[in-house]
Image 1 (cartoon, helix red, strand yellow):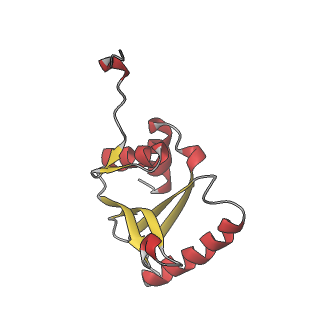
Image 2: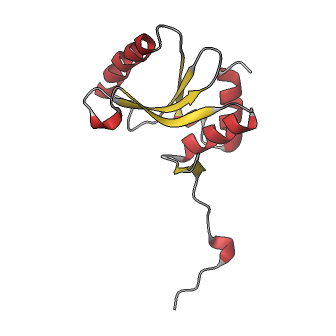
Length: 126
């Protein structure tokens, strides 16, 4: 018989009531929370994943000039997708009327809670 040991139960990484897509995104959310910043997670834009050309913004941070944080994981942001990312970035800027900060942060700089805090604080110039 299988017995669950309480000390072996790992909490699922939840961001704003939703399961995080990655631990790096979870660490970003903890950093934003620690810095007292309001944000939305997984914000659909241009139809989200339901339309060709649509996207999901990892984070949209409520700052005087809106800040988009894109966690650039190796799988989704390399090769041919890199060209798509550049085109998408132009569309995001246009959507916000040119008044948006876009932070493309490599997931490799967000691998621990501490790394994420330092990186987010530095990139947001806080």
